[in-house]
Length: 166
Image 1 (tube, rainbow, N blue to C red):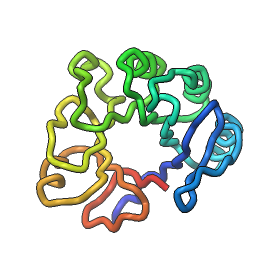
Image 2 (tube, helix red, strand yellow; image 1 turned 60 degrees about the horizontal axis):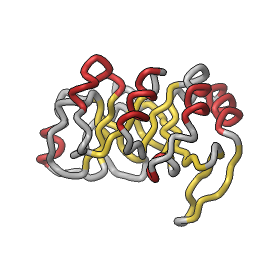
Image 3 (tube, rainbow, N blue to C red; image 1 turned 180 degrees about the vertical axis):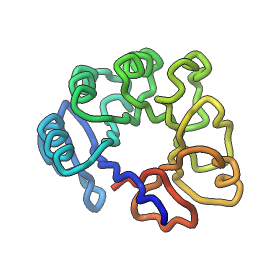
Image 4 (spheres, one colour; image 1 turned 60 degrees about the vertical axis):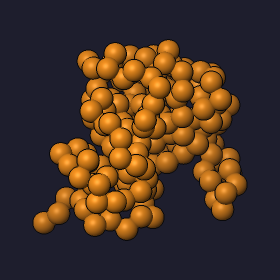
C-alpha cells in the first residue's frame, strides 16, 4: 500500500496578510496565524509560503514566521537575501531556494535538512535535503533519486511524492 503524500497548504504572504491566487489574482484570506491554527486542527502539518515581500528583498514578515514556527511547520519561498535565509533557518523554518542559486548553500550544511531546492531543470542539488519539482523529465527524476519529492497538486505524477502542495 502506498503512503498518502503529505498535504501542504499553499499561501502567499504580503504585508503580514495571507492570500490565495485564483485565476492569476491574489485574494485576501486572512491572518496567517489564525489560518495556521485552523489548518493544524484540520490535519495540515506544513504550510508552503510564497513571501511576496521577501522576493523584493524585504524581511518584514520575519516576526510572523517566528510566531508561526511555534504552531506549525512552515517552508518559505521567495527568500533572496542570505541574511534572511540564515534567520529563517535559525528559527527552524524550512527555506525553499530556487536552484541554481547565487547563495553559497554549503555555509548552511548544519541546517541542510531545512533547505528545500526548487528545480525545473537539471542542476546541482547536493546542498539541499528535499526537492520541489516544477517540471518532470527523466533527467530531473534521476537527479532526485533518494530525495523527498514535493510536487504541486495539479501535476500528474508518475512517481511517489513525499508531499503535494495544495
